[in-house]
Amino acid sequence: MMIIEGIVLKERPIGEQDRFVDVLTKEKGVIELSVKGACKINGKSGSSTQLFAYSRFCCDKRKDRLYLNSAEPIHIFYDLRSSLTALSLASYFSEVLRYCISERTDSGNVLRLTLNTLHCLEKKLRSEQLLKSIFELRLMSEIGYMPDVLACKSCGVFEPEELYFSVEDGGFLCSDCFDDNGGKWTKLRLPELSAIRHIVLADFDRLFNFRVSDRAGDKLAAFTEDYLLTHLERNFKTLDFYHGLF
Image 1: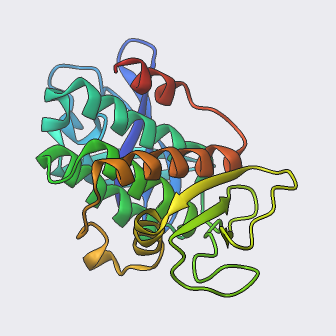
Image 2: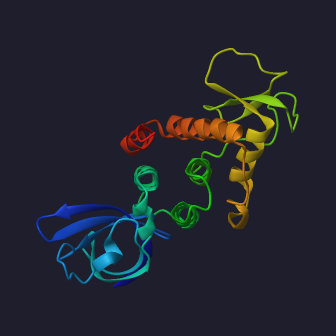
């Protein structure tokens, strides 16, 4: 028997009463749990196994599959359901996590990022656009795609007023050094670069403690989304749905 804490990323019904749930955990990455009787009105798993529930799971392992024995909710993130855009954004986060986080992966920082982002989303502590940017770029940094944000790759200038960021290579050139010889470049200004640096480098305790102007936020949002989609090399249906709401 093992005890695991994690957040439910997806539910899949099996038959009339049972279901599988995908859970993001700290020590084991994304795992699949078999939940017997989950669809019964008085099922013992109750709210602990519903979508976006952060719970403590007591599991039995039989052969290569984990079966839920009991579960205790820690936080349900129920208020996400009060906003269609917030719920769809959380669903996008879930789809991305299920794609890029494998089983048996140390995912402590990713779990912390997810919980903190959903908390801010549920409580409306930051705009959805900014939370989406933070999640996308910090997640990519945590799984090995951290961009080089320190200085211009050519001359080493630290704070260029204008710059061109390579989405593919993850570095930037100041406007004086930039020569468009092909590739995927995004034109940014210093405020957007400062926000990118904060998202990539800040401690978790300070990660959400910044704001950007509307103009910088729009440029940042376009960049972080493009960066994630380019490096994961796929699109996400939940992202298309989220954009379709506006």
